Amino acid sequence: MRPGGQPNLQQMMKQAQKMQQQLAAAQAELAAAELTGTAGGGLVTVTISGAGEVKAIKIDPKAVDPDDVETLEDLVLAAVHNANDAVRKLTEEKMGPVTGGMGGLGLPGL
Image 1 (cartoon, rainbow, N blue to C red):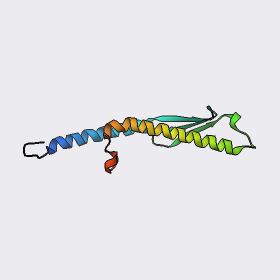
Image 2: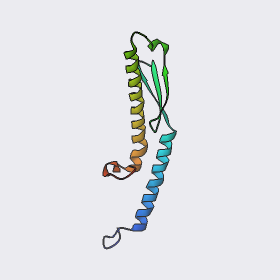
Image 3: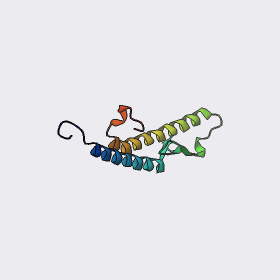
Image 4: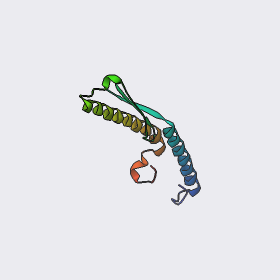
């Protein structure tokens, strides 16, 4: 702060601009990332982008039982959840240092 308790507007703008650049870089890294979730000891594998888009689902033929479709459905769902957890962890890892915990302040994009 400047004498008299007034913040230095130019310094605040530079900090905001730097934070915006860091956020953009972190978002680009997330968008380029592909994460994998598995279930059933690898019988089902889901690949998901850092933005949360499901890219691929691989199902081992051993997981396919026409008389037990529910188990396969559960395995696919579990693999998707596992992949989404990986996305959440990566997002926290990449965005946490940039936002510094400011996400709870209701600021747009944080």
